[in-house]
Amino acid sequence: MRAFGFLSFGHYAEVPGSRTRTAGDRLRETIEVAEGGDEIGVNGAYVRVHHFARQAASPIPLLTAMAARTKRIEVGTGVVDMR
Image (cartoon, rainbow, N blue to C red; front, side, top):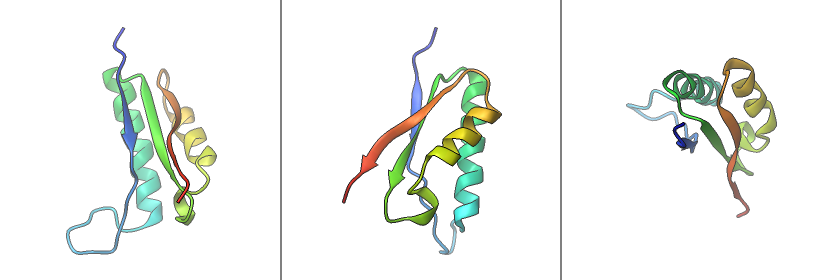
C-alpha cells in the first residue's frame, strides 16, 4: 500500500493567466484533484483552512463533497491557519 497524500492550498484570483478565477472554480478544482488522486492510488487529500476567506473558512462541506466523489481516499484538514 502506498502512503502518499497531498495538501491543497486553494488560492484563486482574478488575474491574467489564472485559471482559477472564482471561489467556485477553486472548490470544483479541489474536488477534481481529489478524484484524480483517488484514481491513481493516492490515499490522503487534505485542505488548508483559510479563516478569512469565505470559500475556505468552513472545510466540512468541501471535505464532504470530496468524500462523496472518491472511493478510497482519506480526506481531512491539513493546516488550520489562525492568523
